[in-house]
Image (cartoon, rainbow, N blue to C red; front, top):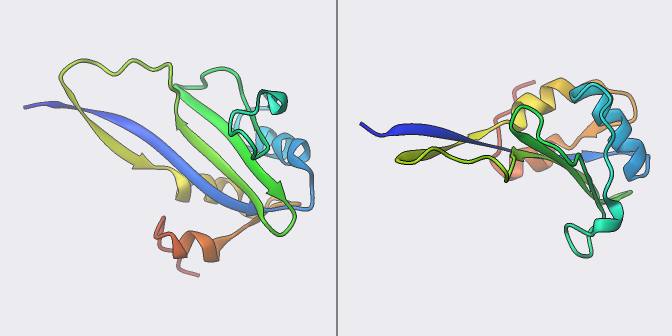
Amino acid sequence: MRKKYPYFTCSLPIASEEDIYGVAKIISEKLVGGITFGGLEDYIYEEVPAVYINRSILGLEFVIQGYGGEKGYIVEVHSHPGNDAPDNVNEVEIDLTCYVASLLEGTEQIKIKHEQIVEQDYIIITE
């Protein structure tokens, strides 16, 4: 029997009138205890503005990317690329989108784009 190794992923669309650093500050306070996002000048997504936390948090990396305004932002959480998967395991993807959405629900200055989540079949939302 092969062991299973989780690969965590989240791609949560949000809207906010805040700039990317304002959104990052809000997300940081809600999800990671105020750790600062940075790296806008690193162009990690080439032409799309993005900020990230430059360290592993519980084996995860956090990125916020997008232009804001009508286009909004995407909050991404993934297994950190520095994680070494054990040998002889099957990778199992675990989608955290619903969980992260529930943590951010009701946060002032952030609106979860539920309609886009449903369109992408990320999660089923019942209201």
